[in-house]
Length: 164
Image (cartoon, helix red, strand yellow):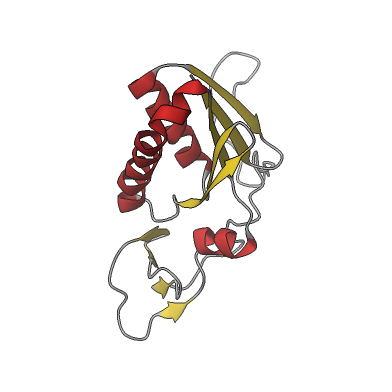
């Protein structure tokens, strides 16, 4: 924190800060370690979810990504639209799936929930805002076009629209 003299001092421990982004899927308490997700098999250890083999006797608790899938409550929406989509749909969707595979390998909570046809294009829903952004950036990097983001901080929701 900056003082009136321009020097920095550490924050006091009794100063509480409001959470910048409220994510109802973020655990309110620390889970016992190790904990295994019964749906996908991800393991919570050392404060994060990873792909690992759970030791015998591990606790079980649904991971945030599987809970979002169960609740059908995405954190990210990616809409692909435009004339280019009609002729290259399979390529674009494969690029999105490849991006998911790369991210999911290191971050088990980043997944595609669904791919659906919508009016004027295709909608991809994701369990995490970072994956939605990464898919949009991959589309733009590979095929250019028009890329737009709309982030709703209160809902921790990212809407990405890519068209060409």
